Length: 465
Image (cartoon, rainbow, N blue to C red; front, side, top):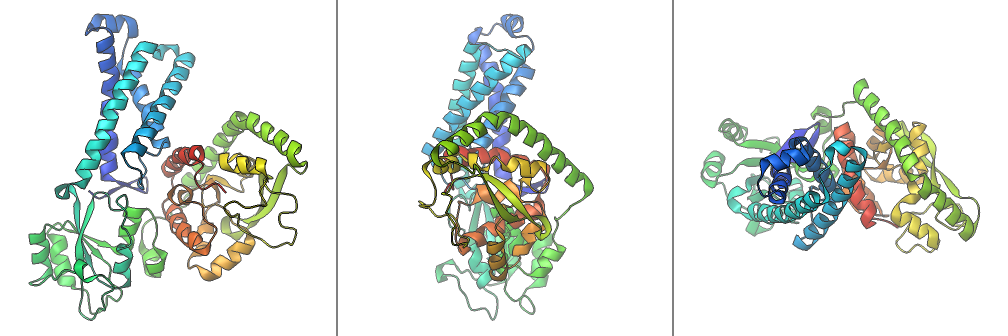
């Protein structure tokens, strides 16, 4: 299965099918629980619960949101059945709590403890079985999308770096077809000979998609045969589009400027910017009210441990390269950079205080940035802002690095949920590829998905330093 472009974001069809099937399971679970509780008596169900379908919709929506927040719909799933089971349990416990809160504020949606608990038990068992079946189906070769990579040099070799099962979920790379004049960088056992012609090979091999990964196209590409394949219903994809759709990033080490020039995306129209700003203000105010006790606790903890200042102010680079001061709770000793030299935080950094380490692990140290969002310097979602010293260095070393400043920096971002924390140039390179994907495809829908998936990052302390 390929991907579907939904509100500019590329979503794997397999996950859309999974989400639909699991929504049906959740909707049915509530009905089944009610039938079991009242022994199949529809009259008793109606007398005690009234209309059940609106409650079933609310229950389904709440559980699906909890599943997204627990990381069970992430495109990069690298945990096995044990990890899925643990996340599923947590998601169902959170969903049960949210449903109880919903009952309290909206009594019309009340179900009763017995039916709610029974629904959660049924849903958990059914969802676990659906995940096992999903993983089994994705492993069946007959259901995987058969890909032929055209080319064997640098661009083709980059496809060969997708070795993890999560990266190749739902696809099967049949092989790499060399073109005349190429010096293969692909292992011999992965090379295939098209022999009698590209179209004949594609037809007999059951190829669903041809990925063009040729370093030099002029005089090498078999345009007539590719056109025949395209007219026969075979998808023909550029390798850069393949990475964008499959991995959710822009592969900048093999990118050519014309692709950026002619590809879709980069829409910054007024309505999109207005809805994003409205969302930022609304969410910031709500988060500020909700997190005020945590922020007060952080202030007291810092004062008791090392005194003032409580807040740490640091220059960062924002939209269009404009500098601004970011605010955080101070997590390092007061003389952390006494020599004036900027440094990335490292794992086990001795400059971080005990309280600061806890604040970083829980991400509470980032909460003062809510004021940066309210002032319009940042957004809730976007590339993380870097220090001018690092930006100057990275701009010289990494191609297209300045393009991440086309949008406002964010409290969280696509790179933060797709790639772990890193304090090296290599990590900055990897994160840049995800940041550029966001700049190209950002929308309110993608922002909501990132925020929900950030919950898993915060709860599990991923990438905290």
